[in-house]
Image (cartoon, rainbow, N blue to C red; front, side, top):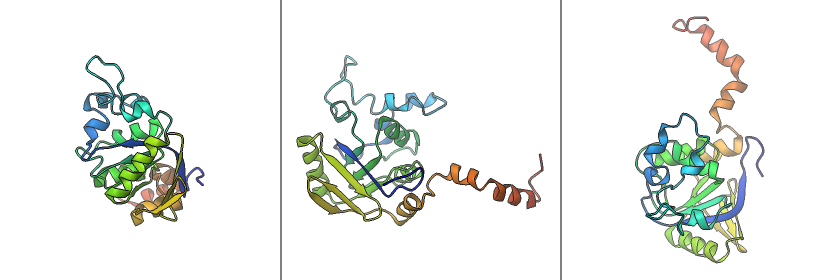
Length: 200
């Protein structure tokens, strides 16, 4: 279950996104980073990969599995530049969690910062899950953040999640902006005590 802040599990249908070393420029092409908000980022997710040479939608998984909320990826996903726009676009498209072989560290940290669990498991397990999703597009995939498991099709597999991500999600401290605002009186008290901060 997940409330406003505490994320202990996420579930929904899956979308397989196969391929190693999928970088942030593939996930969110750089030309769309000129926008001043993240509001339209879902429209740009895998923008080039999802279209053919004529600009028409192709058979990319995100076109075939619309409405899915659990992305299943391979190794070194989110490598390249550190743009926060990549996980923001995934979240706005509807991704609530990611299962993969491995992630670029900054991509994984950016996922944590917006409340998306990114868990890992081995290559064989990932490819089996991707194949199962292809065969069961309406089947549920559940990520148990506390229990460090993924369940689908009557199977439960063990996965890994970093201690920092697990603690942040389960304890509800991943949204640092909300956390800061909820402790604004402490922030103001600390700021007032600092000799280099001028009172407004």
